[in-house]
Amino acid sequence: MTVSATARTRPAYHQAAGNFRIEDALAKLEGDLTGGVNACIECCDRHTGSNRTALRCLSADETLTEYSFEQLRDMSARIANLFDSLGVKPGDVVSGLLPRKVELVAVVLGAWRLGAVYQPLFTAFGPKAIEQRLNTSQAKLIITDSINRAKLDDIPACPPVVTVRSEGDSLADGDTDFHAALATQSSVFAPVIRRGNDLMMMMSTSGTTGLPKGVPVPIRALLSFGAYMRDAVDLLDDDVFWNIADPGWAYGLYYAVTGPLLLGQATTLFEGGFSAESTYRIIRKLGVTSLAGSPTAFRLLLAADPELACDVKGQLRVVSSAGEPLNPEIIRWFDDCLGVPVHDHYGQTELGMCVNNHHGLDHPVRPGSAGLAMPGYRVAVLDDDGNELGPNQPGTLAIDIANSPLLWFSGYHNKPTPAISGGYYRTGDNVEFEPDGSISFIGRSDDVITSSGYRIGPFDVESALIEHPAVTEAAVVGVPDPSRTEIVKAFVILAKGHEPTVDLAEELQQHVRNRLSAHAYPRAIEFVAELPKTPSGKIQRFLLRKAEIAKQQNA
Image 1 (cartoon, rainbow, N blue to C red):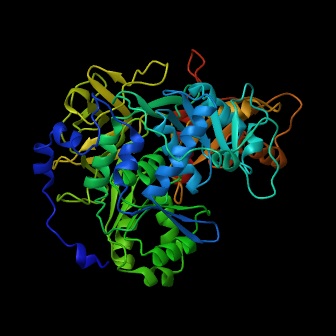
Image 2 (cartoon, one colour; image 1 turned 180 degrees about the vertical axis):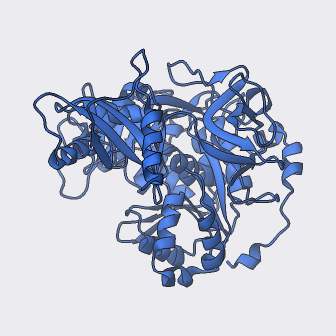
Image 3 (cartoon, rainbow, N blue to C red; image 1 turned 135 degrees about the vertical axis):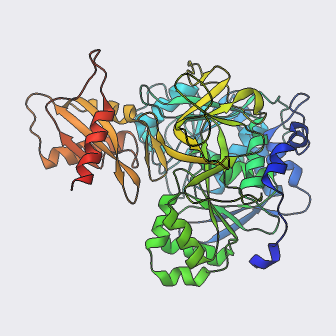
């Protein structure tokens, strides 16, 4: 496919937003949210019959295997039968601690086929992060592989485990062998019909004052996911789509797996780790025309050998960016060196994507802007008293609940949701309207850290640090970093008998890596005698962050 082959007249944004009707979105589903729907039918079964490619899997050595919708349907049926035999019921949570292979997609679809709820567990998570999320979801079953199985050994009251074994690997006592068990199951399983408000996913999001919160995702969120793929990503029938985000996170599960399959389009999974060289190779090998990822990944493409970019210049049609604000230099570089527009998109685990520079709709795109509200959402900028603000007045980005028919989030799982009040969902992000109605991002209004596209709750890292016997107290902040947006920095008060050494700092870093994840550990540690606090004893992270910014500016 050439870029010129897809030239067409795009609908005007304001016309699409003004003419949005929820009835039109509902009509794009096979099922009915009130009369009965199944997510596996919507993302798989309805697209069978033409032997179309549904999934391209690249192994770590970049060997390509393709799967049709028919193959995924049969795999999902065998998995649904297996889950049913193990006692999983509709509405139960099934957790997947799986790499980017076909088994991951099949497990997701199999859970949905049964009417169960899928919970992603990122494979870089350590035991503590996994335990926190399992405690939230009360999962009935975990599916993992041989490489990640040991992380479950020390988790109290761990649910039953199904293991995808590699050849030659032993099976832990009590585990079910995934492939051996599937071989005995029927490839027929009638999808369990659910309602739009029934859940399909249980996600997690980090905050500043507590453990990760559960984000229940109902089946009706498919309406929003589909709208994003059509209007913002502009996924076309002849596109070769690759979203490099990991399905262990929202952007990957929502838009690398669910979104494209919902539209009947093939998606791509690469088992290997990210590098600029492999990314360019895969783009060229597969003929990728639509790429999605984070600015951190795109900065690495920019920093690589320019000859690599020359090899694929003109091949990509569109590039979509999410996870953190897009730097203007990346926009210029993609245009000059790859000959493709890269557009910034904004969203949250709780919302999906809702403010975008839309590839599929015609509107001005201003560098530095997150874009315009996706049709089906109405956004507002609020002051501290909940009043809506006009252009060039900084405030909190909020979603007008009554006038956002695609909004699906209604509150955290078994927890209060103070962000929802007065008819709005407050995102916690500071923004301002531009005169043309677009949104400019200013920063987080809380202490959540954005590093390499990951949102990291400081409380999680502080809790992991305090578990170490050398640590009495800890405070964690995000420090500006040119390549990662922010890095995690920890200020640590040591217990008596421990000395602040380089070796101890490295030991604490490794402790957090092992307990939480490789992306959340503090890349910088400073040992201090005290931490700034309010009279009530709350740590004032903003003072630590402000001091770090001043230190950088004066360096």
